[in-house]
Amino acid sequence: MDSKLPLALRNNLLDLFGQIEREFENLYIENLELRREIDSLNERLTGDGQAVDGGDPTKGALKAKASHSTSQLSQKLKTTYKASTSKIVSSFKATTGSRALCQLLKEYIGHRDGIWDLGITRTQPVVLGTASADHSALLWSIETGKCLLRYAGHAGSVNSIKFHPTEQMALTASGDQTAHIWRYMVQLPAPQPPPDVSAPCDDDQDSSDREEGEVDGDGPSEVPTVRVATATLKSHQGVVIAADWLVGGRQIVTASWDRAANLYEVETSELVHTLTGHDQELTHCCTHPTQRLVVTASRDTTFRLWDFRDPSIHSVNVFQGHTDTVTSAVFTVGDNVVSGSDDRTVKVWDLKNMRSPITTIRTDSAVNRISVSANQRIIALPHDNRQVRLFDMSGVRLARLPRSNRMGHRRMVCCTAWNEENQACNLFTCGFDRQAIGWNINIPALLQEK
Image 1 (tube, helix red, strand yellow):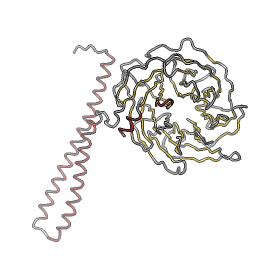
Image 2 (spheres, one colour; image 1 turned 30 degrees about the vertical axis):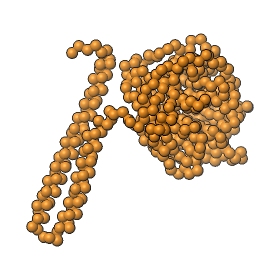
Image 3 (cartoon, one colour; image 1 turned 120 degrees about the vertical axis):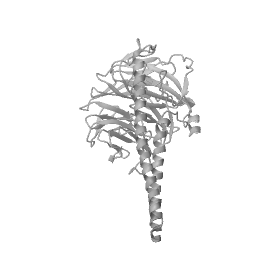
Image 4 (cartoon, one colour; image 1 turned 135 degrees about the vertical axis):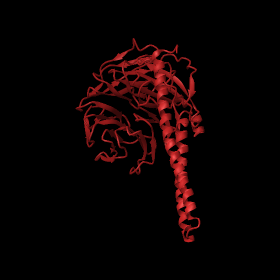
């Protein structure tokens, strides 16, 4: 047959339909086997009834008990049969529990390689920061999507970016085995009208018809560039994968592939503590918003809670709730820690009693760097399979961000970050497709659906 579809798109569609056909075939075979088992059980029930009739009356109780047990098994098989026949059909239905609108705010395009991390400044003017494998960190105007400044002081991949709580300073961690503190000054351009683009939060259309390297819009061709750090921290012997400011901004913590986390004084760049104990590379670190607490995550399937509230001593607690790499662990405004893992789960823990999680969220893909909104306590989960899902702290799924050929990420989503300034609730995501995306989340509608 002649087709006007591009060959690549047509082949992709044929492959997808082939997968669907194979799934139906497997279910059909499974259902045939279940039907045979049901028929066999029904025959046994009939046979048992005939054999007991006219026999010893004392066997009536045994017959009733056997019939009851067999009928329970028969009913169980029937239930399994019904569930399996509806499984493939239900997978094509849109989830009715998340009809809230997620409006596309802006796309931030200009990096030349994947974006590992992003963050929002805590001081005015409020801007978006992105950290990329292209050895740079960029600052963006949230409203216009314009790149305002480039930091090019690292000699390796920039793996994380965090902003000082009160000053215009940024902290970046890099594959060049250093963390940098650098100052920035930006001026916001005039805001532009927001695009009129909105979609239900469960848009499942694929975006494979877009080319891998295709980007929309113009990159940051001529932007101010900072090349020299205010302070360079060099104590690690491996990739520095993450860094964060402690409350007050006078100390910072870094996490490295050398299996250690370091605590530094900002003013002197002096190394205060080396936090050792993890058996494998660290993957993330996070600080509590109001207390001198640090959490570190590792490939050794654990995360550790470090307590620096007493200046004379620091204690550590080890938590083993996951079965694979813990990709991130973050504090909430309350007394909770939320951890995400390559084992496809997210767990919510109570700081007052962390022997076991109070909530476990099970997903279908590895979870990367999660974030929790401060006001509404909504968890944003970025996945390897390009999905971004929203859950509340009790594990109830609220929404899934759109992913189609019009919007959404085309490759792995690496990180999420919330911005709840000026009565608005914006969620920012970044991925290895070289772009960051801003979303306006309709929180009232989400909570109403819940």
